[in-house]
Length: 151
Image 1 (tube, one colour):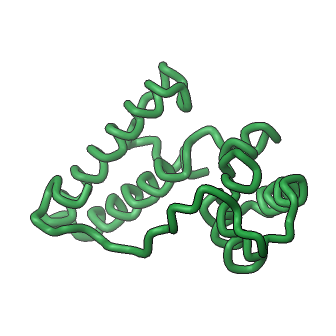
Image 2 (tube, rainbow, N blue to C red):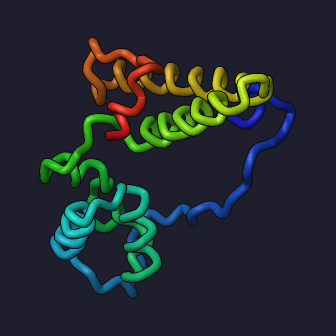
Protein backbone atom coordinates (compact mmCIF):
# COMPACT_ATOMS: atom_id res chain seq x y z
CA UNK A 1 0.00 0.00 0.00
CA UNK A 2 2.90 2.31 -0.62
CA UNK A 3 1.36 4.67 -3.16
CA UNK A 4 -2.25 4.59 -2.11
CA UNK A 5 -2.22 7.83 -0.12
CA UNK A 6 1.18 9.32 -0.86
CA UNK A 7 3.67 9.42 -3.67
CA UNK A 8 6.31 7.56 -1.73
CA UNK A 9 7.62 4.22 -2.82
CA UNK A 10 7.20 2.43 0.49
CA UNK A 11 9.74 0.59 2.57
CA UNK A 12 12.20 -1.64 0.86
CA UNK A 13 13.53 -4.65 2.68
CA UNK A 14 15.55 -7.73 2.05
CA UNK A 15 13.83 -10.35 -0.04
CA UNK A 16 13.93 -14.01 0.74
CA UNK A 17 15.80 -16.14 -1.85
CA UNK A 18 13.49 -18.04 -4.17
CA UNK A 19 14.64 -21.43 -2.88
CA UNK A 20 12.40 -24.33 -3.80
CA UNK A 21 14.10 -26.78 -1.47
CA UNK A 22 15.37 -26.64 2.08
CA UNK A 23 19.12 -26.02 2.55
CA UNK A 24 21.17 -29.08 3.50
CA UNK A 25 22.50 -27.49 6.69
CA UNK A 26 19.11 -27.43 8.47
CA UNK A 27 19.23 -30.14 11.13
CA UNK A 28 15.69 -29.94 12.50
CA UNK A 29 12.83 -32.22 11.52
CA UNK A 30 9.29 -31.05 10.83
CA UNK A 31 8.00 -32.53 14.12
CA UNK A 32 10.67 -30.72 16.14
CA UNK A 33 9.80 -27.40 14.51
CA UNK A 34 6.09 -27.92 15.17
CA UNK A 35 6.85 -28.58 18.84
CA UNK A 36 8.96 -25.41 18.99
CA UNK A 37 6.15 -23.39 17.40
CA UNK A 38 3.64 -24.73 19.95
CA UNK A 39 6.09 -23.98 22.79
CA UNK A 40 6.52 -20.37 21.66
CA UNK A 41 2.76 -19.97 21.17
CA UNK A 42 2.20 -21.09 24.76
CA UNK A 43 4.65 -18.38 25.83
CA UNK A 44 2.40 -15.83 24.11
CA UNK A 45 4.49 -15.03 21.03
CA UNK A 46 2.76 -13.91 17.83
CA UNK A 47 3.29 -15.90 14.60
CA UNK A 48 5.66 -13.28 13.15
CA UNK A 49 7.72 -13.28 16.37
CA UNK A 50 7.89 -17.08 16.24
CA UNK A 51 9.17 -16.97 12.66
CA UNK A 52 11.85 -14.40 13.50
CA UNK A 53 12.92 -16.37 16.57
CA UNK A 54 13.16 -19.63 14.62
CA UNK A 55 15.20 -17.89 11.94
CA UNK A 56 17.59 -16.07 14.27
CA UNK A 57 18.04 -18.53 17.14
CA UNK A 58 17.52 -21.93 15.50
CA UNK A 59 18.70 -21.26 11.95
CA UNK A 60 15.46 -22.36 10.29
CA UNK A 61 15.14 -20.24 7.14
CA UNK A 62 11.60 -21.25 6.18
CA UNK A 63 9.03 -23.14 8.22
CA UNK A 64 6.89 -23.57 5.12
CA UNK A 65 9.66 -25.35 3.22
CA UNK A 66 10.45 -27.59 6.19
CA UNK A 67 6.94 -28.49 7.36
CA UNK A 68 4.89 -27.88 4.23
CA UNK A 69 2.61 -25.51 6.19
CA UNK A 70 2.87 -21.97 7.45
CA UNK A 71 3.20 -21.05 11.12
CA UNK A 72 -0.40 -19.85 11.26
CA UNK A 73 -1.62 -23.14 9.75
CA UNK A 74 0.30 -25.10 12.38
CA UNK A 75 -1.10 -22.90 15.15
CA UNK A 76 -4.64 -23.36 13.79
CA UNK A 77 -4.21 -27.15 13.78
CA UNK A 78 -2.98 -27.16 17.37
CA UNK A 79 -5.75 -24.81 18.56
CA UNK A 80 -3.63 -21.70 19.24
CA UNK A 81 -5.20 -19.47 16.61
CA UNK A 82 -6.43 -16.11 17.89
CA UNK A 83 -9.88 -14.74 17.06
CA UNK A 84 -8.42 -11.88 15.00
CA UNK A 85 -5.38 -12.05 12.71
CA UNK A 86 -2.14 -10.45 13.85
CA UNK A 87 -2.15 -7.65 11.27
CA UNK A 88 -5.67 -6.56 12.23
CA UNK A 89 -4.67 -6.49 15.90
CA UNK A 90 -1.64 -4.34 15.10
CA UNK A 91 -3.85 -1.85 13.24
CA UNK A 92 -6.33 -1.85 16.13
CA UNK A 93 -3.48 -0.98 18.52
CA UNK A 94 -2.48 1.84 16.20
CA UNK A 95 -6.04 3.20 16.11
CA UNK A 96 -6.18 3.01 19.90
CA UNK A 97 -2.95 5.01 20.19
CA UNK A 98 -4.18 7.64 17.73
CA UNK A 99 -7.50 7.94 19.57
CA UNK A 100 -5.71 8.47 22.89
CA UNK A 101 -3.50 11.09 21.22
CA UNK A 102 -6.55 12.89 19.82
CA UNK A 103 -8.15 13.07 23.28
CA UNK A 104 -5.22 15.20 24.44
CA UNK A 105 -4.66 16.97 21.11
CA UNK A 106 -8.09 17.34 19.56
CA UNK A 107 -6.97 19.88 16.93
CA UNK A 108 -4.28 17.64 15.43
CA UNK A 109 -5.56 17.40 11.85
CA UNK A 110 -2.79 15.11 10.49
CA UNK A 111 -3.57 12.64 13.28
CA UNK A 112 -7.26 12.72 12.35
CA UNK A 113 -6.31 11.92 8.76
CA UNK A 114 -4.04 9.13 9.97
CA UNK A 115 -6.93 7.72 11.98
CA UNK A 116 -9.15 7.74 8.89
CA UNK A 117 -6.51 6.03 6.75
CA UNK A 118 -5.81 3.39 9.40
CA UNK A 119 -9.50 2.64 9.83
CA UNK A 120 -9.78 2.29 6.04
CA UNK A 121 -6.98 -0.29 6.10
CA UNK A 122 -8.78 -2.18 8.86
CA UNK A 123 -12.02 -2.24 6.89
CA UNK A 124 -10.25 -3.51 3.76
CA UNK A 125 -8.48 -6.24 5.72
CA UNK A 126 -11.68 -7.31 7.46
CA UNK A 127 -13.47 -7.51 4.12
CA UNK A 128 -10.67 -9.79 2.85
CA UNK A 129 -10.68 -11.98 5.97
CA UNK A 130 -14.47 -12.36 5.83
CA UNK A 131 -14.22 -13.40 2.18
CA UNK A 132 -11.55 -16.00 2.97
CA UNK A 133 -13.38 -17.28 6.06
CA UNK A 134 -10.75 -16.26 8.63
CA UNK A 135 -13.22 -13.94 10.42
CA UNK A 136 -16.92 -14.65 10.96
CA UNK A 137 -19.24 -13.07 8.40
CA UNK A 138 -21.25 -11.26 11.09
CA UNK A 139 -18.21 -9.68 12.80
CA UNK A 140 -18.13 -5.88 12.54
CA UNK A 141 -15.49 -3.29 13.33
CA UNK A 142 -16.61 -0.83 15.97
CA UNK A 143 -14.14 1.96 16.82
CA UNK A 144 -15.73 2.45 20.26
CA UNK A 145 -14.99 -1.13 21.29
CA UNK A 146 -11.30 -1.29 20.39
CA UNK A 147 -10.16 -1.83 23.98
CA UNK A 148 -12.32 -4.94 24.11
CA UNK A 149 -10.58 -6.40 21.05
CA UNK A 150 -7.13 -5.67 22.46
CA UNK A 151 -8.08 -7.25 25.78
